[in-house]
Length: 253
Image (cartoon, rainbow, N blue to C red; front, side):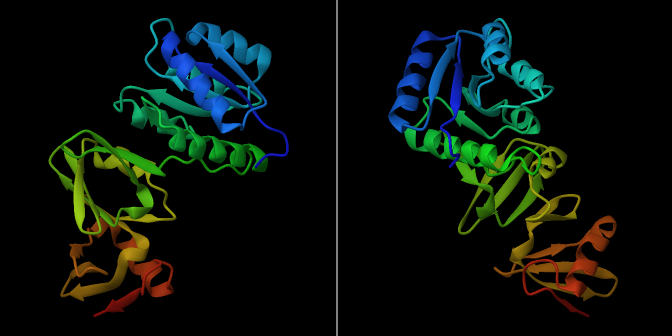
């Protein structure tokens, strides 16, 4: 945690939402000061004057959206850590492209808020120079009863299904309405590798790279077999031969 408690600016056009977030922030005991803004334009003024360490930022506001506020912050010399708080998960891709710390759905749960704030404090402590954005710590999916947060590190592989991506986790799978290209941009290269135009795999789930004639396949630890597309072969064959994929990394002819 940072040596000095951070300051936070809560930005939301709904008074009840502001009050609830303020109460949650007070309960965490993590903040030096807690300020409020009733919309995007007031937020810009307070950001310039107060230079808060952390923003709890609503997205859908009538005067100026949280996305626009975040874009403004990206041009500042001292960039605050941004945690989006919103009733909609449809902005998640745009939000993470802005390199925000987290994206929390309302009603915000205290445990998730605390987790996000502690991560923001860690980022502040180590500085923005070496801050690798937490773009893909979690993804939102629909599970039939509502929205569900998945830890990206739990995803073993991804397969395209028409306009959706199917995310495979141990013993279950979920559909995500997102393109392969946009999902790939959110997943850290250190954890995932694209093996085909329709498949992405977590590196440490690859147990073997196998050749069958002119075709190549990755064999996952659960026994699944995925074809390696010709344009992606160099991403797989070279690292596997050099022992850099993260699994057992054997190449079988």
